[in-house]
Length: 348
Image 1 (spheres, rainbow, N blue to C red):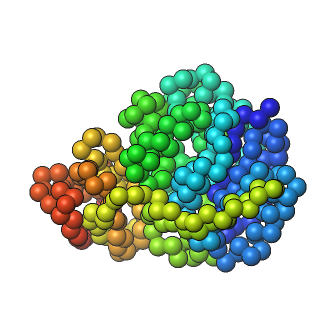
Image 2 (cartoon, rainbow, N blue to C red):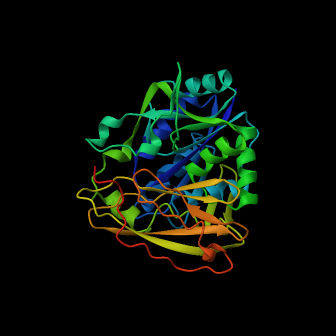
């Protein structure tokens, strides 16, 4: 019996084909939907994806004519092309390799713990080769069968009615599509937790790529891959239908607010940097701005609903920035704020 729609994001690498083949063991339980962002490998990869659609290994294939990173998730769900009627919804990167029965484990945790909003696969960190995961991803609680922590798109499994609540809230609040917005919605609105499963450990295959790999070079062409306001024309395909869809803005009625220039003045590269900013209604937004090398500067763009007032939270590895008392915070007077020479993390 089918219990879940599983939406996977594909870009550049052939691993998505192996992942689809591996997931065939769940074909009696899940419908697989592939979102493919365009790359230099699309001409060779797309026919293989279309063949898997033809033989019924996937239910739908959505091809974005541009690379819009995880904004593809938002565009897909906004278009309402798939009926969300199955009990569970799974959202994941397309390079998560999991040998164990993660699906049963995730469902069992959700059934056992009504206070949990989502369950993701735990990831093997040994592939990081000495690099560390950001503090914000560390567990805050430990239970018998799961860890409580902020999680990414690693077979993130949710009850469909609660996922639909997030999609509706996202539309009303005009949020970009980001895993931390999902976490904050669960925590602040539903008062529920995000969790990772303990038993089955998965591998995030792209973690093993070198920084100068063709994959990372392609990804860098997007600029900041966590800028989820990108949009694209896309084509939605099933075995019986082909439907072109015009790219719609992921967010409506918003304006550019300000930018912050962040410079890494430490003596080492930073794998991941997280900035947070908070609306006056206390709903927090957390945006990863990705790797930042020694001496490198990254510009972080802030966007906001017209009726929101924002301030940047003080994170433990960031110098405090507080614009909450700045009268220019009124969004009727947007301005560019440059914060140069900001330490990305503490020197300790």
